[in-house]
Structures are given as structure tokens and as C-alpha cells.
View 1 (cartoon, rainbow, N blue to C red):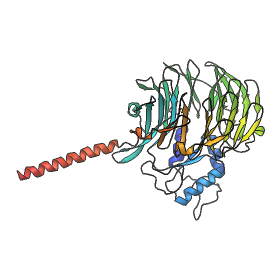
View 2: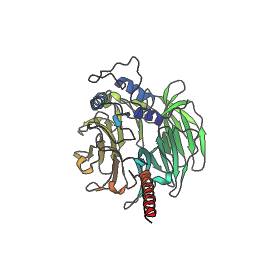
View 3: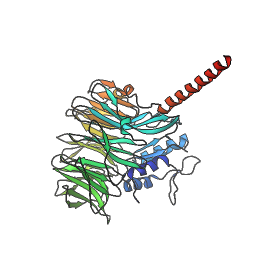
Length: 457
């Protein structure tokens, strides 16, 4: 049976009360366990390649929500909650967001002329709230809403990439996961033989597209899709390194390994004892991160840096290279600088590091609950109050300014001034169904008035 990674995330979001056997978990006050223990969650996340554990607040009291958030975070598990899609957030409790969710910016990319910005929005259709994809175009002056042109429902745009000629968009949510091509004029869905698509990377001539589990690989050259046969049962991560793709995966016998793929043949390189979450190439070697593990791989030798890095059991959640050194961040707030020889501990004062990005002059480092700091290589500057986004999901630099997006917000930041673009996202939170309800109500009123006037005449 084919199981989509996004479908599993959907189960985590909308089915918080799970049947459990032989699971021991300290119970919240006067209640029996309603969610799995941290140990079970960690195994689940590794098994299904989940980056974050998301649970619904439906059926949970305020005290239970607070309890489980503390429990999972104390175990170093990235965790957040999602309210039921049909109602506004019902609990008065401090969470990664406090106001009802109208939209979430999940992805963005720049093509040299304009940004494409993706996410999900909560829209009303005849009074019933539901999730719908959000897609925006921003040329630096005007935001244009392209969402209706997608002709998709019940999904989110959570990855966007440009190859010099056209865009690829990853659309996923519930049981759907697919790739849409956008050439600036029209949208077309790629004819893939699976609805579970997780990864894609461009090598200069074609895309490698992968489904994590069960493993499916495809090559797409802009005209046709070709399925690639392999002995992989799972794909953890793919990246471009030294002109070719590197794939981290697990074979049918359960062995984890790194492979090179040139578009025609696989070349097995080395075994690796972790479910790889991140791989970044700096021009000479890869840094490879998994849960509590860090490796350096130059194409010939795999070097274990785990002990030297000193993250312990902490999950490595972000890493980036600036041309001179790496910044490596952890899910419990650890931050290290690595120059290729030694690791240096840095104090960002963030409780959890979620994303790290470099613009050629300074770093932006994102933490939980909207915390964000600037780092110039020597000093940290907290700019959270300038950006003011409750939960930051994505950021990107185009050579002149940053775009920072998240829950109910999109901001432009040039290093000094912040411009709030949120109010320009007029499409988000629209009430399309309510519009029709108003039309119907108006028609009924006109009919009644006509009947009253007719009686008087």
C-alpha cells in the first residue's frame, strides 16, 4: 500500500487520539494519556521522515495542550498544534500562534524578476471553513494573487523552485501530493505515477523528483517524465553536489546508504547509520545531518563529526555555508560555527533554531515563536520586534531585501526597515461562499418585497 508522507502528517494533525498499547507516558492531571510518549513520537518521526510533530487540539483541554507541548519540547521534539479547520482557534492558551489562522506562508523563491510565494489559506465557502492553496506573485511593488488559477483545493504550496525557464511547485496536504509546473502563463500538473511527492532538485538540464516512502524516482526534462528504477525502499534526502545528485536512502534490505546518480546510473558510495534529514554542499564537501548525527563527506571519505560537534542527542535542525564557515543549529537552541577544522559554540539566546540563511553580509537565524536574530559574525542582534511575525516559516534574499513569511504575515526587510505586506494579501481569508449566500439572501428579500408590493397593488 502506498503511503504518502503528507498523508501521514495529515493523520498526525487531525487524529490526535491514538490507540496505544504498552505505551507508558506520565499522564496530565486527572487524565489518561491521549497522545504518544516522546519515545514513540521520535520513532514515528524517523520512520516516516517527519520534520515536526503536529497534533490537533480537538478533544484536548487547555491544560492538556500545555502539558503535551512542554512534554515534547523538553524531549527536543519540534512540535506545534493545529486547530480544527472548521472553527477558529478555541483555546485561550499561549501557543505558536494566538489569533485565528487566515493564511500561512510556507515557501518562496526569486527568479530575478519577481517572487513566487506559496502557502495555505483558510477560506470560507458558504460558512464552512476549509484549507485552500495560496499562491502569490510579488515584483517588489505589487502582490498579485494566482491562487484561483491553480484549480486545486485542500492542499498547500510548500516548496517552490525556479530553473531559469519555469517554476515547479510542490502541492501537498491530506492524501494529495504532486508537482505543478508554471511557465509564467499557465499551470500544468506533472503526470507522475504516484501522488506522494516530497523532493525535487535541478541539475542544469533536468529535475530529479522523489517520493520519500515508498521510494519513487523520476526524471523530468521539461517535456516528459521518466520513471527511474532503483533498489531503494526509502529516500531521505537529495541534493546536487559536484554536478551530480547525491541521494541518501535505504535499500530493500534496510541498509542506509549514500548514492550518486548521474541521470542514468546509480553509484553506491558509502553506508551511513542515520536517517539523513539535511545535506548541504559547499563546493568541496557535503555536511550531512540526522538526529544527533553529523558527517562530512567529500565523495571518497565519510568522516563522523558527531562527537566533535557536541550536539549530543539534540536534533540538528539547520545548517548553512557562507563561503568561509558553517553555522549549524539545533532543535534545543545550540548553535555552532564550523570552519572545516574546529567547532565553536555560539550563544544566540534562541530556544530552538529552525532556519539559518546568509545574504553575503550577515546571517538571519530563525527560532521558535517568531524569534529571529541577525548575526554579523561577531555579535547577535534581536530583530524579533522589528519583524513581528508570530511564527516564521520561511525567508529568502533576492540581492536587495529579504522576504519573511509565516502565520498571518508577510514582511519585507532590507536590514534596516521593515515593510508589512500582510494587508495586501487580500485573497487570504476571503469568504467566497459567503458572497453567494449574500446574493441568495438579497434575491429572497427582493422576491418578498415584490410579493408585498403586488398585494398592495
